Amino acid sequence: MIPIYFLSEDLGQERLQRLKQRFSSEGGEYEVRVREILARIREEGDTALVEYTRQFDCPGFQRSDLRVRPEEIEAALVKVDRSFQEALEIARQNIENFHRRQLPHSWFETRDSGAVVGQMVRPVSAAGLYVPGGKGGETPLVSTVLMNAIPAKVAGVQRLVMVTPPGRDGRVSPHLLVAASLVGIEEIYRVGSAWAIGALAYGTETISPVEVICGPGNIYVALAKRLVAGEVGIDLVAGPSEILIIADETADPDYIAADLLSQAEHDPLALSLLVTTSEAVARAVAERLPVRLSWLPRKEIAEKALKDRGAIFIAEDIDQAVWAANQIAPEHLELLVADPFALLPIIKNAGAVFMGPYSPEPVGDYLAGPNHVLPTMGTARYASALSVENFLKKTSLIFYTQKALRLEAEAIVRLAEIEGLSAHAEAVRVRLKV
Image (cartoon, rainbow, N blue to C red; front, top):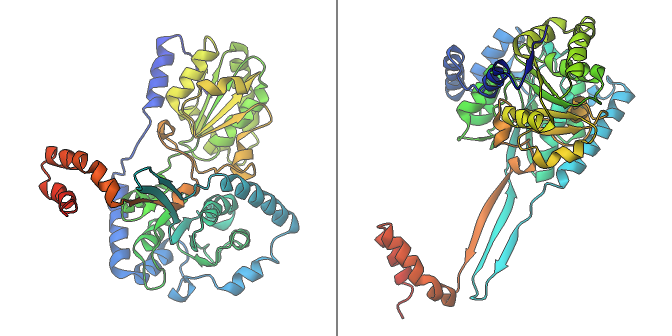
């Protein structure tokens, strides 16, 4: 079901290099279609939104159905059980506490010359939050609501706009509405896919545009975000889910198998990798996987992901295992080793690191506090998790006195002249004439 390679052999190195080069931004025929959708939203607004929603989500959809009414949000509160609300509150508190520590602050520095420089930090005015439908509303992605909205709220964004596709009956899951209400989202629209991204970026008669768009989605959503980036800010363009587990001889093969499957069940293109220093652990995991797979509801998805994209690598030692992980730069990195903290100094590339046998990846997905919107496809080499800073702008501040300008004028003029920008130099010289 899942191939085993030795990193000391050519075949293992070849497989590792192929996985390292997995980045893809090609949309092909999908991109042509998404460009067409975005153009129609820009030109036709609500009319196109309603037409696409009727075609792909809810046949009886009307323009008046676009915005979720306040009474629908209130009614949702009595449709969900208490245990769900309690779990949601625990997650909200943990996520908010974590993200509050990320807040940067405005600052000023006064120099001896009298010059003042600094940085002013301000939130964007509006953020758009995309929440996938999840099997037509059957599997509401409530964690996505929290992970996208809470950093924006902590940043101080005043207007949060949530978009999510309706079910065939035109409704939005009450679980999503309750989650949105908990984090203060009052503006919710029943639209999905690329046309929702277009509405957030360009605006329509009903939906006013935003400055930043975040949230996961299918290839249409990902391509739409990439195409509107620049006109608005985006979090990142995410690929299929990924996990890489580094394990030594102390790791429990059942834990490893369960964790590999936790990502494989997301998508046939999901990446589930094990790098271990123990051949015995590698063989045991390969044996456990079919057993654990047999009873999964999403068995077919997980099995295809393991066969097509999964791999087990046997490393000569822990340094080689970490080297391999740094090459892959996975979205999720688990350290199932005797002393996970000892490896942190040599971990260079990972979206999030889960340390020890009792920190499985789903802890981060739902409750721990760090954001679960993470870089994929090897982009953890330079990219970071969604954070408060995605919703902030930093404006540089400069104040010079006459004394300060005179002290540095000669250097400014010299640099401007080297660049051939005489008007720049003259803008300084004119202020030195008394």
